[in-house]
Image (tube, rainbow, N blue to C red):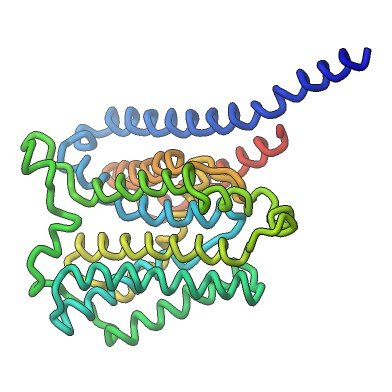
Length: 338
């Protein structure tokens, strides 16, 4: 009788474990279906939507927002939030401008410098959150303002142009694929996006940092009680996210051929929207890079399609906000079913 009860208990426990995986996969499938639906609707509404140049423009826009969204994904999986990703991107672009244009250093030095600037900024945010126990929302809000001010001070409130840096625009606008296959002029920025995505997916799925990222979001106190140095891993996550923002800074600067110190604020909203739409839970402990990429594509396709249909920018913002609310509500429903 005892064996029978044990078997029944074990059998009943199996569906409970598999449930979240099914709902998470369903959320990503729903997002992908929404992406396909948007493509079909905009294609039927305007013949200009599926033109090659427009598709390339969508991919270029997605490369920047997608990289930022991947950085935000890492932080949100821990149960935190990072409101500074947009201004950190701008700050890293300005640092690249200082190194390359003001100081005339070689291109590789500017690239490494921008990424290290992002790492350092993320490290500061992580220390403030982990060691000083400042809530992530407040800490990254303060960092957002600090980085915005520093970008304006360092640049002298003026754009920094990269006209004297050969090859800088090729980082985002060039096409290695197009050089090999002229029929596929895929921008380098898109290749960098997928490279960052693959690396982030590997980190989340195959490394200790990835395991602790999910563990922190699921139950930070349990991780702490198990003897793990929670602060160290949390700081590491914010530092890695900052490095990824440095890559985004290089992409946006290369795309514009300039570092615009006033640019960046507002990008964090699109990045967080992409993360939420892609199925990452704002409560932490759940999320995928693939879902984030789908979310970033949805944001870019939606903005591009509405622009082609001559919908005012104000209404585009309204639509994006509505989608974010629906995505968060879907996450709430999913957590209720756990």
